[in-house]
Amino acid sequence: MSGGTAGQGLSYPTGIDRRPGPRLAVRAVIVSRGRLLIVNAWPGGQSDLWCAPGGGVEAGAALPDNLAREVHEETGLEIVVDTPCLVNEFHDPRSGFHQVEIFFRCRLAGGETPPSGWRDPEGVVDRVRWASRAELASLRHKPDSLAEIAFGAGVGYDPLELLQK
Figure 1 (cartoon, rainbow, N blue to C red):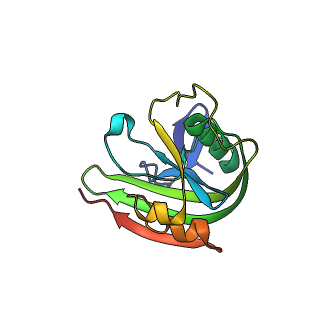
Figure 2 (figure 1 turned 90 degrees about the vertical axis):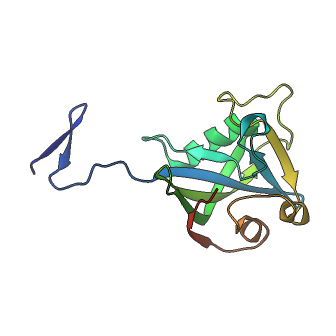
Figure 3 (figure 1 turned 135 degrees about the vertical axis):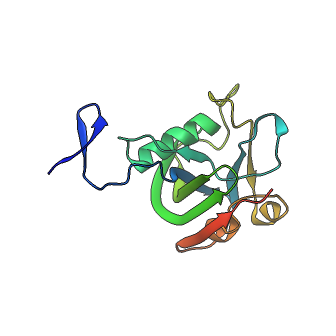
């Protein structure tokens, strides 16, 4: 099969679209004692938006391994990754940024409290908290279906959301 060069000795089959596509990310749904673990990924209080911990995947690593790494970086906590429970996607038409997120149900492998002195090495997450369903309802969070998925059962799909300012 003939193809184009992809660098580092790899070859793409002819006709494959190599334009950058959506960013793939993984997120953890961790519920303990009726509370969901959430993070604020806007350093320095730039935003009041909360989400499940997680982040972009690195090529060559399994999705659960990427998720365990991201949760540890963002919270200092160790987890066991279970089954997928939600696919969410969003797009910012102004910047062209499009992200697809796969949420997994997870369990803590240790305690609920980040280690003393914990800091996100990338400096993105600076607030971590546990929230009950009622508390989550009073906080601005994404995706909109997070509480339903976290405190319910089953699998969900949160369709493409255009980000508005």
